[in-house]
Amino acid sequence: MSTDQPHSSTEQDTGLLPRAQLLAENLQAVLQRISSVAHSPNSVRLVAVSKLKPATDVLAIHERTGHTHFGENYSHELLEKAASLPTALNWHFIGALQTNKCKHLAERIPNLWAVESVDTVKKADALEKGRAALLSTSPSTPKLRVYVQVNTSGEESKSGCQPTAAPVLAKHILEECKHLTLQGLMTIGAIARSRESDIPNEDFLTLKRVRDEVAQRVGIDSDQLELSMGMSEDFEQAVSLGTSNVRVGTIIFGQRPLKKDAAI
Image 1: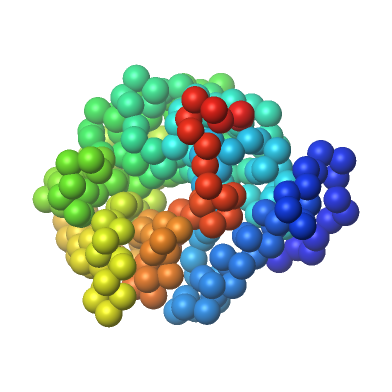
Image 2: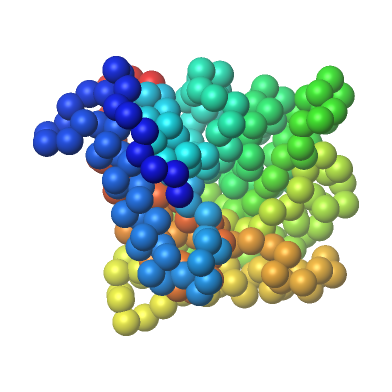
C-alpha cells in the first residue's frame, strides 16, 4: 500500500479532516477489515463504489493510496468519470445493465475492467459487439471481463438471471463472445439475511453452489471463476465465505446524495 501523498489544492475540509485524508483513511480501514477475515492475504479485491460522488473523490483516493479499482452504477456517470480521470484506473460497471447502453460502455471505455451485471444473452452479445469494435481499432486493449449476475434472493427488485439460467449464459459467453472473458459470478444478497449474524447468508451460499454448477457444465475448475458478493453492510461475511471481490461504497465515501442533486 502506498503512503499518503501531500495534500492537494483541491481538498475540501470535512469536519476535522480534509476530505482527501478522510477518504483515504476510510478506504484503508475497509482494507484492514477485509484482511482480518480473509483466508489469505491480498486474496480479495476491493471495488470502491463511487456512485453519485464527484470525480474529485475518486482522484483523491487514487492519488493518496494508489487504489485503482472503482465501481459505478450508472452508465452516463461512468462514461463521464472515465473520460476525465486517469487511464490507470480500473472501472467496474456494477449497476442494472440496459442493453442499449452495453455497446457504448464496452467500446468507449478502454479501461473498463469488468461489467459485473450481465444477466442475459442479449446483453452479453451487445458488450461483445462493442468490445470487438474497440479492439478492431485498438488491438492492444484487453478483452472485457464480465460476471454473470445471479438473482440468488428471488427478490423482484433485484436484477440477475435465475440460478438455473446461469450455466447456459456462461456457456454462451465462453463459446460465442470471443472479445469477452468470463471472470465469474456476481450477486446482491438480501441484507436482512446478512444481519442474521449467526447464520451464513444463504444468497452467498447459493452463488457458491451456482459457481460449481457453472464450472461443471462448461468443463473448468471452480477456482477459475471468481465470486463477487458483499457490500458495505455485509462484505466481511462475504469475505469469510470466500468471495474474490467486494463492492463497498457508503462506508468509504459517505452517504450518497439524491440522484438529482449529485455533482459528478
